[in-house]
Length: 317
Image (cartoon, rainbow, N blue to C red; front, side):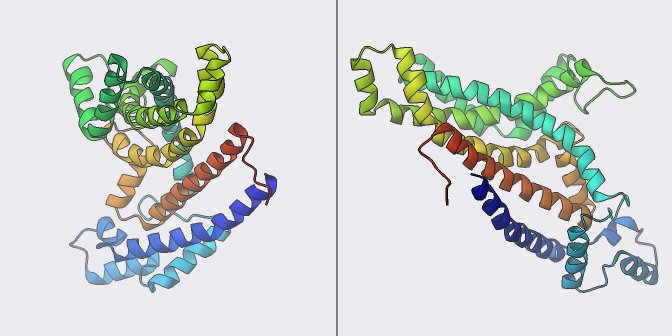
């Protein structure tokens, strides 16, 4: 397993480099530049040219990329072209709120999807099955922004019982209770999406396992149904379930961009949107690299979990 992990890490290095090159090419092809966002249109062209030179935007694209990559090898993601803060510090300061939002949503979503998907498969074509499948389709079909705005209207504007934005109440010291109140609505939106996607996958995986001959043999030997399901069926159904759950981390990371913008949640998603709108090249590159690392780590953890769940899977070569 150790050799496998090391090999995957070495394979990830050229992948990350390729991602940064593609991101830089796309970013350099986009219209506008940080100078357009920083300086008033009334400023003379000479001043604009001087600002481009100061930010290094006058150099060819490949020179700009090599300069950025050289600093990256030294552990430096550069400075924001808008706020002049270190990009690494900006990302780290926003990572905590995003991990909190994503982590709580993922845990609750999985806690709903797995048992409900298993029950739905065991009671196929029952009222519970139809209700679970219907809820699953609703969770997938309703856009995040629509559900988020609907919750804000109901609970913040109409009922006035939940805060509509931010992570803590302005002017307060925050605290667990205050953060919890601000978490409720964005977590509901992301949880609905996570549970909606995974109920169908868990149900489908369990239905396939329940039709296997070895479960009929286990029942014929007199094993209780609970033991048959929990020890034999669920364990063998975990491989496709783990695959889907491993994909949830990158999906949640992308979905957080919309949710954090709607609820003004001070995380990575909100920083991404503000960086794109202001053409903050250095911050965008740092965020893209962070997202690529998260995807690679999520895939690696998924592969390791395979071996922990199913002892037949070996990574010896």
